[in-house]
Image 1 (spheres, rainbow, N blue to C red):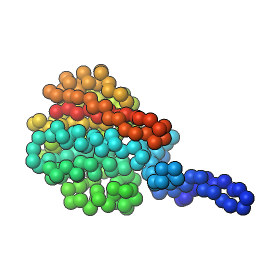
Image 2 (image 1 turned 120 degrees about the horizontal axis):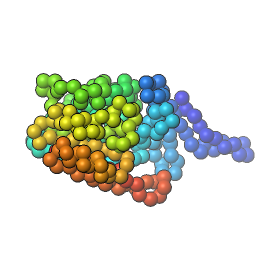
Image 3 (image 1 turned 180 degrees about the horizontal axis):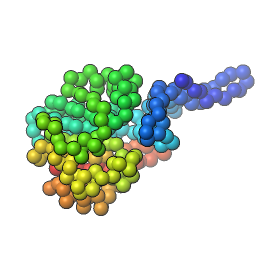
Image 4 (image 1 turned 30 degrees about the vertical axis):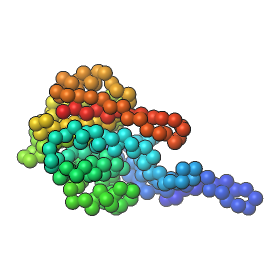
Length: 245
């Protein structure tokens, strides 16, 4: 469905903004929408995801999502890496991980069938590159439930990259909260190889309390502040990437 915001003037129609609804699905956490809009000022198509009344992500802001993969994998040792990505979204973390030539296999878990379907249908800018790469495996599952379970045989990873919640304090669903506790992180660590890396995206500034929790489980932990240009405000914005091993 395409929606135009139009202004009629002297017999001419001027299109101010254009929204195309690419997909709409009800989910247990609210209505999920993928839409594309054309920004005439920036001269680009912008892909956006909404869950209920919340904007989850936008292709206009992908720097920190990509840095999640770059910073996380930079801390990983080994010539051939097995990677788990929690949260598929628009695909920018996963596609950034594939740029590392050491990545031999990458599993991406998402709990929403619609999100996986978007990429299999090629609806997003990185979809084709992501799904055509033989190293990629898309899995429909609850990442948080997987982390609570004992690892399956052969299912441990050199790096786990997580981008689902807004931050350790602000989750999309209350059932996610236990992961950010000491017991939750110890459960996650069982899914890592010896010396493996856990990296986490956050929309909030570095959280001192979470760093204490992270450091109680991992021998090394660091919070990276990632700055990026914000064309909507004309200034800078920032996200946080936590890296622990």
